[in-house]
Length: 241
Image (tube, rainbow, N blue to C red):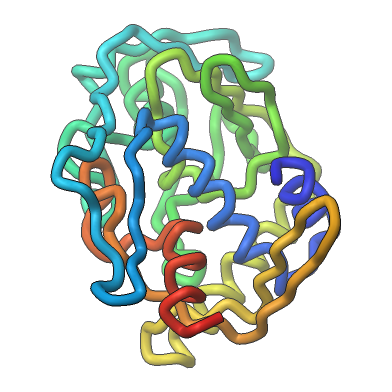
């Protein structure tokens, strides 16, 4: 599925990108330490076992490399979350790490919350603009990330790289975010994905205009109502797809 995600991202097709963002969040559910059995019964619907695994809080010293400026370390106990609407207390994002490191190391960082994109954006860092990031969990490798900077969860052993991105790709990512937010507004806050494509080695199945609702399967990490890829699959199942 990782290769399929990468292909979707590289295509820059607006209908695929929203799904790709959710797919990436689905990968995080594995990396966050969950190994529970998730149950969907035709009689009772969605439910979690009482003893499902809980995502661990970050406890180890981490690092963030800013290309051209060096590698900086951070103590997770000192990080403040800027998106309490996304994360539960004790959990935080890559962007939270950057803001903390800028404050503690005297880096010139200007940022703002962009309402059209529904995310924090870096206006300039050390006098330069056009920054983006890649990140991967322990044992993984860097991929071209398109998850919002302030929504990518940090875990122990994560590698984080901040770098100056090609302006065309940065503009494309911003445009995808903008369209996603506008589409949600047009649907009175409902999440409707234009195209969901499921790929296997032998078949491709496509669903159009999929309404997605939150099932709070990661209520140990995320606030109620945060959408992940698992919600897409559960919603399809509940709709009889």
